[in-house]
Image (cartoon, rainbow, N blue to C red; front, side):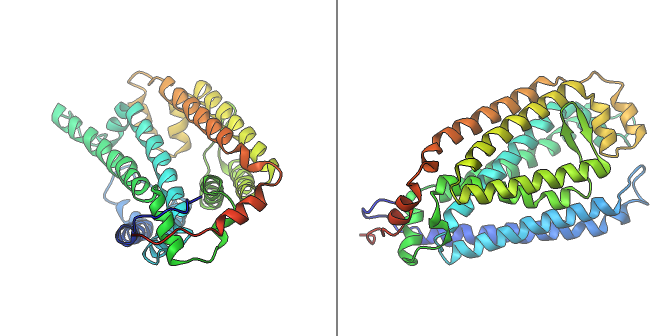
Length: 334
C-alpha cells in the first residue's frame, strides 16, 4: 500500500498514457473489424483460405482487447484508483504474450520465412533477410517495447498516490492487495478470452493437440476454471492460491509433453495451413524444441516464485488488514 508520506503528482503521465492507451484500443478494434475483409483476399492469394470461425475468433478477440484498452485509458485520464493495477495487468499480460510470440518467431524463423515467401520462386537472400526483419521487428516493437513502457509508466508508487488523492474513497480495487489483484485480473481476462478461442481451438493436451468439439470443450472448461480462480484470488481464498499453483504445474507439464511428442507438421495442419506449404517445410530440418521447453519451464518457475511472494496475503486475518490500510490517504504533493 502507499505510504503516508508526500508524493510527486503524476497527473500528466496518467493523462498522456491514458490517451495513448485509448488510441491503442481503437487500433485493436479496427484490426478486429478488418477480419471481415479477409475473404476478399481469397481470390488474389493462392492457397489462402479463411473460415467463418477464424473470422469470428479474430473479431471477438481484438474487439474485446480494444474495449479493455479504451476503458483502461479512460480510467487513466480520469485518474481512477483502480487504473494502476488494471494497467499493470495489461502491461504484464501484453509482455508475456509478446515474449511468447517473439520466442515462437525466433525458434521457427526458418519455417515462417518459407511460409511467407512460398509464392516467390528462387528467392534471393535479400528477400529472405527482409522477410525475417518484417517478422521480427513488429514482435519486438509491439510485443516488448510497448508493454515495457506501460509498466514503466504505472509501476511507480506516485501513480497510485496521485489516483488516491484525486479519489479518496476506496473502491473495488482496494479489496485485495495490488500484487494479488494483478494476477486475479490477468487470469479472469484469460478465462474470458477462451470464448472466442473455443471457436477455433488448438489446445496442447498432454502429448496431443486437441481441436474440434473436444478442443472447444476443454478450452471453455479451462477458461471457466481461470475465471473462478481469478474471482477467488480477488476474494483472497486460500484454495485459489493452491489452485493457481497446481494449474500452473499442470499447464507446464502438458505443454512440455506436447512439445516433445508432436512434430511441427501436426501443428501446422491443426492451424489449417495448406498441404503444399507444409510439404515445403518438410524439406528442411525439424527446428529444435528445447527453446520452447526452456521458456515454458522458466515461465513456470517465475510464476511459482511470484505465488510464493503473495502467499502471505492468503492467511487468516489479512482481509481486515487490507480494508484498514486501503483507507489511508497520502499527503498532498509539496
